[in-house]
Length: 637
Image (cartoon, rainbow, N blue to C red):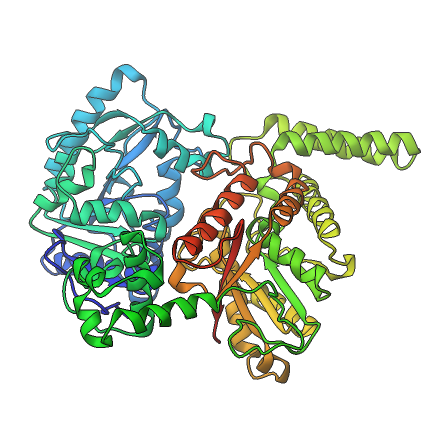
C-alpha cells in the first residue's frame, strides 16, 4: 500500500512514489518491467533493459524470477546491459557483478546468454578504453535502452558515476569515491580488498534511456534522495541530472523518503492534517530551530517559523507547549522495568509485576550491550529476572586470523593436558590449510564457522557475567537464516520463526526488548525483528502475552527521533563507564571490527556519542540534563 499521508510539493523536481515497504516498491517495479517485456513480445520485438546491482534491486529480480516461474514471463526477447563492474574483477569472483546477476536473475530465467552484457573487469588496462567504446556501440546496435533500472549511492552516484561526473560522460573507467569503497566493504570483508576503480556506463549513456526507474530503500539513503529530488542539478550529485530526463520514476520506501520536505516538515509546504504525533514533531522541530526550550516558545515563534496553521488549530502556544513538554517528560524513567509501589499512570512501564522477567533479543552477540547496555545493567541492578537471547552466532564478523589464533590455542591446550592431541592436530591442520587457501568472501568450513561462533559466544557470556545476567538465562539461538558462512544470508524461514516462538513460550516474559531497525531493509537486524514480530503475532492470544510490553531499541549508528521515543532511560557517568566495559568484553569487535560500517569510530564510541546526543536534545528542549540516555519505542501488537 502506498504512503499517501502528504502530497508531493513544488519542491520535488522528480516524480516520486512512496511505498510503506521495499517489498511493495520492488513488486511495482518488477511488474512495470514485465509489462514492457510482454508489450514488446506482442509485436515480436526485443526489449532492452539497463540493469543495476547492489542490494536495492534484489527484490525486483526476485519478483521477476517469480513471474517467470509462476506466470510464464519469458525473457527470450530481453537484451540486458549492466551499468557497471568493479575493476579489476574476475567474472567468477563472488564479488563480481557477473556472479551477482547470475545468482539473482539470469540463471533462474530463460534469457539467451548472448543477450546478456556486463562490463568486463578482467581486461588488461590497455584494452579497457576500446571495450568501453564497443559497449556504447553494442547499446546503440540493440536500439538503445528501453528501461534503465537505477539505485543511488550515498555519494549521489548512479552506476559508478561519482561526484564530478558530467552530463555527457560515457562508458569509461572511473575512480571510486572513498565513501563508496567504505560501503562496499561488507562484500569484500576488508576495505583494503575493495577495488579502487570500476567500469561504468556514463551519465550521458544513462540519460539516453527511454525510461528510467530510480529506486532507494532505507533511512541511510534519505539524505541523498532529498538532494536528488529537491536539490539543484550538480555534478556533485550526479543523480540530480535525472531532473532533466523526460520519463523518470522515483520509487522509495517510507524511510528513504523520510528527509523529503513533504514528510519531514510538511507544515512548510502546505496545509496538513494535524494529529498528535505530527503536532509533537512540529513543536520539537520549532524548539530546536528557534533554539528555545519548549516552555519558552511564543505565539510569535510559531508564526515566524511557518506554524501559524498549528496555532489556529490549538489556540495558543502556551497550552501546546505544556502538552508537548509533559509528554516528553513522561518518557523519562530510571526504572525501565517499572518502579514498584509508585503511581505508574504517567510512566512508560508498569509498576507491577515486580520483579519482571525481561527478555532482551540481540541480533548479534554484542548488540545488547552496545545499544541498550545501560538499561540492561539497570534492569539487573534493580532485581529483574533478565534473559538475553542472541539470535545469530555473529561468526562472519570474526577475522580469519582470530580463528587461526584460537585454533592454535585449542591445539596448545590439548598438548598441555595430553588430551586427544592427534585429533586436535588434525583439526588444526584442516583449519590452517583452509585459511591459507581461502578465497575472498568464500564460505567458511564447518569447523571454522564453529570456532568463530565460539569466539563470539565466549565474549557474549563474559559481557553477561559482567552485567549480572545469570548463565542459565543466556540463550544462543543460532537462527538458521544466518548460518551460511558468508555475508549473503538465506531468507527468513519457518525454522527461524518457530525458534523465537519456542523461546518466548519457555521464558514467558513481561518485557521484550528487540532491535527495532525497520528502517534498514537489508540488514540482519531487520530479519531478526521480522522473526520476533511474526512469533509475537502467533502467540499474542496466549494469556501471558496479554501483559507483555515490547520495547524496540535502535542500533549503534542511529537513535529514534525524539517524537517517537516512548521510554528514555537516563545513564549516569558511572553507568556509561560500566556500559563501556561491557562492550569491551567483545574483544573480536574492538579496535577494528570486520564490518565497521561507514563510521571509523569504535562501537563503544558510537554508542556513547549517540547516548550523549539524545540527552543533549532533551536538555535543549528544556528537560532535565543528563549525562546520556538510551531510548526505546513501544511496539503495540
